[in-house]
Image: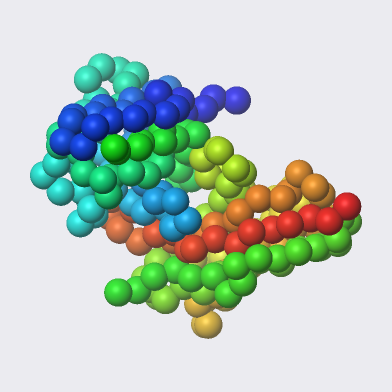
Length: 113
Length: 112
């Protein structure tokens, strides 16, 4: 069964450094998403992406965050200058159409020191 | 703001029994709902979905019920197995950008 894959599984970064989280969505999916889950809390929406542009973003997704689909298979989330509070699990998801099930990867655990 | 919430943080059931996990939502404009299962160290796994024009949908051993009058969603798992032990989240889709709003999660523990 096709799946969303995310790399790395764990990223440790010094505060203030840039980090790029990578995702390969399911190949025929057209909609892409990033969510995060701080330890012990709810899964929170960050951003949705369709047709090479952001469809919607939450207030968490400030100017320090950006997304890109650099080629036909990868979808990346960049945090320019990481803060301690960015420590969380980051999940990538994709769906074939907008109002259809979103399928999630197993996440990248981001630890900011 | 409006949010999705869960009544019970932990549900413990005997293997073979049926499980019911509940979810309250407050946004009457939400038109699509999804249940996810999350095992330790993994991402949310899609279980079943339902649209607001339906009140019941069945899958393999799972049934989702939607009561729009009281803004309530439930997930029923028949003949619960040890492999069903996980955290279960409901999520609602409201935004034009297909943003999912997740509930806080219910931990299901299955006793052998």
